[in-house]
Image 1 (tube, rainbow, N blue to C red):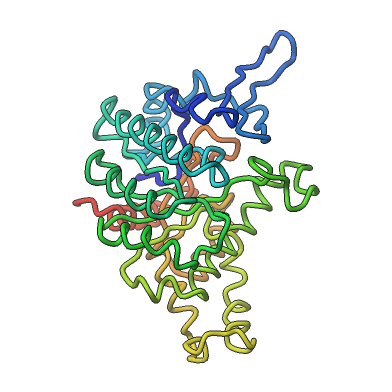
Image 2 (cartoon, rainbow, N blue to C red):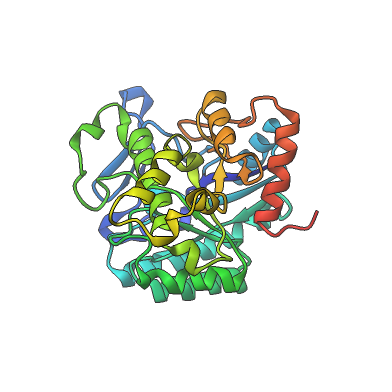
Length: 330
């Protein structure tokens, strides 16, 4: 199985963003203090990074072997997107992160690959860094947040989409929690870790709607975008999105054609790390299995080591899809 949803914390990134961190507190079990990972004003409590597959390639590969994962494409921790940071700081951080990411496959070149972090607050710098990360470092695509200070369909981001198409690599979208570099939109999300499951669903669904209804997929017909966690609530809302686009005053002219929104949704790729078999069934019922790829969030709080839930035929299909998305030879 090829796993496309697997975050990593890199030693080289710790402290590389100044006051924003990242900062790792390994905790003290004897004193009852859990581990904590801090970026800006956000603290992720209770997830152990050091001496775990997050930071130890040997432990990661052992966990991959146990789960039947043949290849894992590692991605930046969403807490470290730094979308609100100073552009120069974010650019320097991205270069440092990508250099360290590219060095990881030396541990097991046939088992690990990497996605690039980009300084999206400066789209030209982000496009240049994507070209460097792919062309010089051998990374296999871009890994981008969903809330970047302006909508994903803003023409300012066109250099990034152009660089992805010209480099022939996919873009993977994944939300970051609120509260890292600015206050939460809704403090109610602070309870029950709502940032991580409800907030992410909201962000992913809005990102899909923006790419489709905002015309990004029409401007960049060869752009491949994969959305984390099955695109949030998109599978459930697809018909409602289509109806809104067809009937509301802001609807694009092309949306009047029956099936036009669904056709564009069908061009996106979907991460199968959705939380359980019921959600996966809904995703496949909505969009089929031709553009679904496996993801586990290995060692994360919600790891799902078998996202196909024992379905061998589906596992084979998802593996073939990942090879197509990553431009890997059979």
